[in-house]
Length: 139
Image (tube, rainbow, N blue to C red; front, side, top):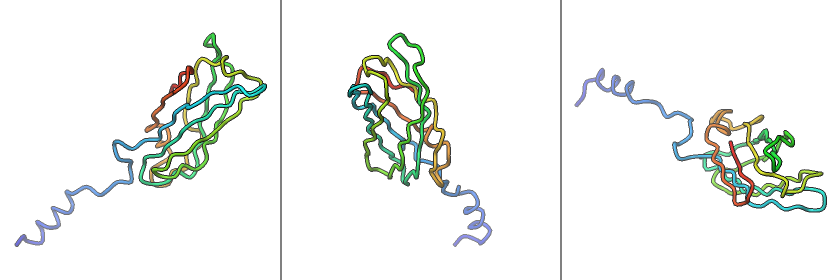
């Protein structure tokens, strides 16, 4: 049987469980489709929060680049609530823009990230991006 001081020292050496995300957890954002509808570009994103807890709200600062690589506009995309381990589709219509006029979209960072114990930086630090379209998605 271990003496009390050995048990106490053992407990002090074992690190406490941190609320930080698991190493493979992420906020995955995929540009799934880009469709011109009349005078707007409808962007559809498949989003998945693979963290153990819900993200109450995330808003990404987004930069749209035209076909020449010039900044067309800077905007905010509110992805809303992202439940843990449940994919969601979010759509945004960008008025007065044809999708074939976009070359890339840059996620500049999260202007809002309400993620509780995960921390406000989790929406940016674990962001993984992908595009199924001709428009590149960067971050």
